[in-house]
Each structure stands twice: as structure tokens, then as C-alpha cells.
Image: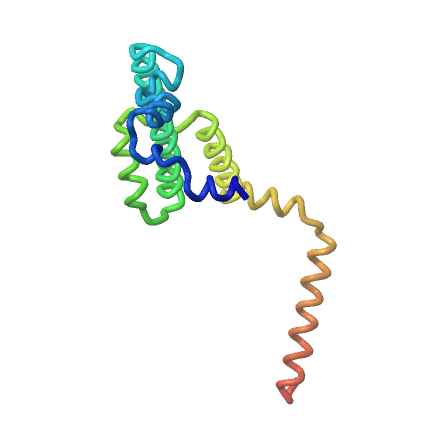
Length: 159
């Protein structure tokens, strides 16, 4: 019971602030961040500069990668005659003129282009015909002809 009364009333001199209680809290939390990190002021400033430089370098690398991807998208849009994207063009302008598409991606695009050219050419179509089964083609053709004859006989009374 005595504890309850003491906690409610408290120490009558603690609220006056005669310099006895406030100093302990200030020592526990130093105002200088260098002291909080356990470094001298010069070390802390150098550390902060290093952090800022690393962040700028990461941001520049990220921007360059985004510009490379935008360049690839522009190439693909040109290839397939798709509408241009203003966002990609802006990204390339922000990165500057030194943006190139990575070689691996260019190789992949070139391989796809040669495959498509091969399929589109007359020789590619002839090769596809050679790969087909001729007996199966004859069966399909004869089935189609007989189906057309039967439909024509149903519709035309002369036949």
C-alpha cells in the first residue's frame, strides 16, 4: 500500500528540475550522429560521402540498364512495325547517346530474324512441304472433295 501511495504522489522535488534528473537522459542519447555510430566527425563525414557516391553509381547503372532495355524495345518495335513508345524514347534521351543493346540480346533477336526469314521464303515453304506426309495430304484432299460433292448433291436437284 505504501508503494501505491509513493507512486501516486511521487518525489515532490523531481518536477522542479534543479539539475538532478535531466542530465542522465541527455547522456543516454548523444546529439551528434558520429558519436552514436562510434566514429569521429571526419570519419562519419567520409562515410556519408561514400554512401552518397555509391548510391549515385547504382542509380546511374540502373538508368543505363533501363535505357538498354528501351533501346531493345525500340528495335523490336521497328522490326515488327509496331507503334513507337514515347516513354522508351524519353528513357533513351535521359541516358544519353552511348546506350547500346547488349550483345546477347542482339544475338537472340538476329537468330529469331533469320528463322523467320527462312520460314517466309519460298524455299522455306518448299521444305515445309517436304516434311509433310503426302499420304495424309491425299486423304485430306479426297475427304474434302467427297464432302463438297455430297453437299452439292443435296443442294442441286440436277446432280
